[in-house]
Length: 298
Image (cartoon, rainbow, N blue to C red; front, side, top):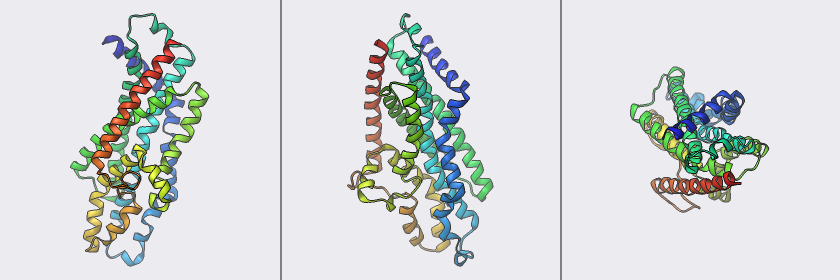
């Protein structure tokens, strides 16, 4: 167990000491934050700022809605980009033959492979939860509203669960690559691609049915929908109270990406979709493990 812990610590320190790697791991999140604060975030709530609603809606409630909607997508992308970032250790270690020293020791091969996975989960979960904590504080200062304790706990557990899924998918993708250049290309496009396919940049209702069906099989899409439903539950309830009816909530749910899209247009409960995502993550983790073992033996 000592050698496994040492490997995990080594991967974590290697990533944390590389400021460039950390920056590019957060790049997708930073781009999304800039886009949201520049114009995307306000577009989602622009109609609610109409002077006609001034006497009915607290401006802080509108900010509550906007920030909750923004962060539902940003936190999911964060689990993806950070997992991928630390998985870059695999590519650099293979390319520079850094693992050769370990291969002549009694350390089991599976410990070497899973040390990358565990280090990715620890680092990703830590930074994601820190970001979640900063969001809670920012929301309270900016809007005057605070997430209920139940939402904070539930969202935290979901983010940890999402981290396991993201790390499993990323380790599989990385084991398919053969060079640092290929990894850099993947890092550059993956966050943006996921942002569009998961309805984070634009609501999925604005896309064709074909695009929505493709998006429905991507676990990150379902993860985003689930997290948004958790974060937006309380502001939507307050919005309904302000208007005295649920018409506004009914109209905003699809636009905010809260409407469940099932699987290929077929209605499937979110619980089963999350179980399916976990099973898929387990399968890809196993395939990634096999790919890694083959690369180590070469």
